[in-house]
Image (cartoon, rainbow, N blue to C red; front, top):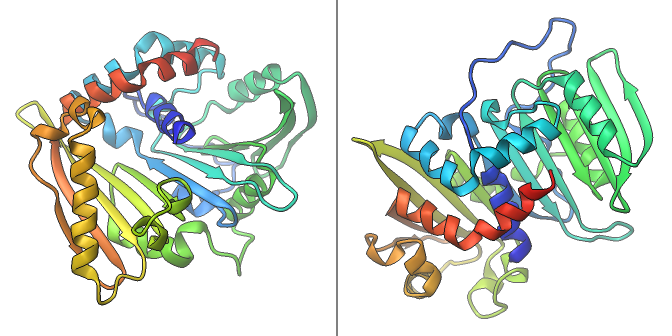
Length: 332
């Protein structure tokens, strides 16, 4: 969970700002399939997937101010300078995927970004950051590929012209799959959110500015009578503003075989969520003052939803994860 928390914080950290209008990709580039970015995420050994839409998030002034506290403009500016001027404030979509170890490969991470990319500057910054570059190539289509090593781990970088990027650490197969999906070369292989229970999970979560997908959540949470039956677990965050007040709608969804025990599942999920509300973390996030969860289940999904005060929630998140955020941006 610590790794996941740091990953989610890193994702939130990259959202700290509001980008302006960016130039369109140059005409010589081919149009890569990047929308949505989740279509680039391969399914095998996937453990977690986080999706966020920075431009939509930062269209809300109160949310932008709250996230500024979470990250800090100085650290974000340092990150941007170290990455060739890449400003995540202007990106339309960011995706993070975490992969478990599988036969013949180690655990890995894949970062994806969609929006205007200052390609030449980012390319130079990436090359300068690696002590060893194994391969560096440019295709006529606008694709730039870098294979390198950093901290004794393989790194794959893909720049899809000015349209988007992929950065894989110890995740060669997911990075290669991301390229094939972007070039629409995989006709028989479907991306992660179009396979198995993740398809049901995405449908139940619905559109949202932030979504988190967990595969086989019993591996990351308690191995007991409830979570061992969950095939996938997800969270959606939908922000809104009214008279300058930030409100977050939280939607938690579990997928599994719940037929003929829907009421039991509803009661158990409600009990678990109330336990979180009453915990120290729940108090820090302002969950004790929020309206109660509304939980409903059917044969394949259980959905829990509630509204929380956004500024309090994000301030609590800042207090809970500030040290991690500082560490992430200390040496960009």
